[in-house]
Length: 512
Image (tube, rainbow, N blue to C red):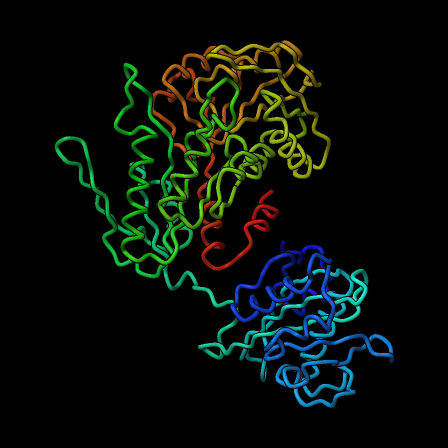
């Protein structure tokens, strides 16, 4: 577990990484960690004597313990290895007298931390000469104890690596000037073009060829060897006609995406990142009936099996199920900052309430309500509606919360048939709402949604462009009520930060 968030600021400034309860990646340190584990023999930590009996342990390791003079430490074994890390020293010297004082300060702080937490951990820092990063140092700290309870000494094992390019910082990452390859598999490329404009990288061309029997091939048309590749594909489906999926169904889009990932892997791609603004097959994330499928997990297994390194999506149907389904890296974006910025100037000084259409979406609505309160600088009420869906039938009439005389903003992750939004809007009006606005990240509208929403007491419907707004939603009855806000800038910033090693968490904190 990375614990930088729990670490004091002075300690953070000294190290690029602190990781607990995790074996080192480097083989030499991993071997030392294995020996430390073997020497514990069931205890919490081993004795220094038992570890010292392990042959070759002090080739790149030394043992230190607290000196009698106070907070400093002395080397008690492995002096030759300590000289490599700390510079010239005598057997009785304390750390502050080391030749390499900056390194001594770092090692002393690490030993203090190992003594405090009594747990092995790995630290990493850059060794600088004349203001330039010259070496990367990775250090394994492991506590030792004679009584098995209190830390009496600390094993320090280290690995020093020179940078291939002396002036390059660690970790060295590509800049956007080096150019990731961004592919857009969506038939409507406007979303991808907005992203490419934002990060100033042209969409990389690819070929899609359909054979006479409906099968197809798909391949990149540019060299992608050792590159970061971002594949944009919003996996929404079109309306089913006569019970059969159309040529742009979610299933077909998923198949094209999987085949394209395979082609990229065969072409030697360095890292494949799937950018799916809308992720399909997320409704079934748990078993509610006997022998129910868990399609969210099956989808994750398919995407991972093709070799995907990272998946970026927005407002998955159930974020907990989404995060537990995938074993590859994932980044989950949300639209609450986008909606809050859009609604704030429209609300003005009117009283507002945020409404969840069901108990499952209550957490999403609450996070948006908190964000909206910060934007408006005043309280925002909340409410929720009871809903239970079984075999296509929706039941539940309980409504809780105060919407009387307020603008009720109903927030959900998606709108499909429109029935849920319509029934919540009716309930809000019944309980005295002045206006009803509906916001959903994904507008996966079916053709029947237009008629349902036209007749509902809804004043405003706002969706993002993760799914293109279909033409049948531009009817005279909805034209002035439906609007689209763009999520492309947020996705573009996420891609930029993933490529350059930035923080997605900070991006969402700033956005939200």
